[in-house]
Amino acid sequence: MIKALIIDDEKHVRDEIKDRLADQFSQDIHVIDEAPSVAEALTKINIHEPDLVFLDIDIIGGTGFEVIERLEEVNFQLIFITGFNDQAIKAIRIGALDYLLKPIDDEEFSNAVNRAIKAFKNDDSIHDAVDVANQFYNGNHQNKIVLRTLEAHHVVYLEDIIFCKSDGNYTTFNTTKEKIMISKPLKLVESLLNKAVFLRCHQSYVVNTSYVTKYTNEGCLVLKNGEEVPVASRRKDAILKRLF
Image (cartoon, rainbow, N blue to C red; front, side, top):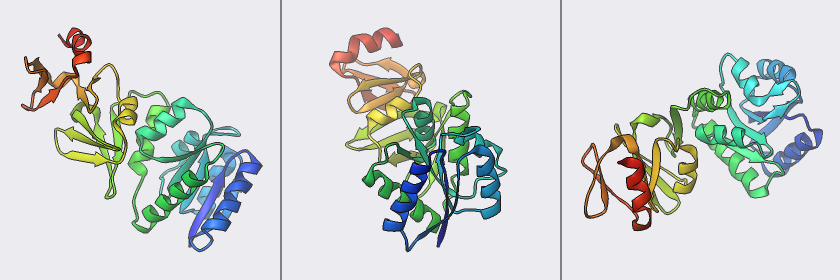
């Protein structure tokens, strides 16, 4: 049985999560406790050693990220809870972590909890993912992103990403070391990348401008690794002006 701890400063939200878990996941998850503040969260995490934590971003005494920062280690699965906090949501997405947006949607809740159960059974560590998200949220320079696949969490340095290619709701990251496909659309991926470095040159491509060497008469960007990436005709003038 998975031990769950709910950290949120709104009692009705804590009650809602408990009710949802009791209705949908009573065979897998047992709620051991709850907490409304940073101080209580730290105490109860240390006492109970939970397997799964629902963690609100804005709580009494600080933020959920402060809770994470003050723990010696993160050895549980984590689902963030947040309102419309753009900085928090971007940090969570950069870390490829799960989150629930208030008011909580039924399907999103079920999907997030099912992923947490699967990750717990596979003994997947989210330490690196949490670290990357926490650094971004605290204003540190974004130089890494976490890519989550079915097999693992991949921590990738942005400077190692050559280009990203869309395939429907999937995106493949072509890096200097490997190719990594994630089940996220290119539009979302683009929103997480540094726009000063990465450029949307085509409906299906985002390219790291530091790898571009030339533009061909056939309408392609040639990259340092020899690969060619197409440029949409309507974007040509703006892209050439920026690059050259």
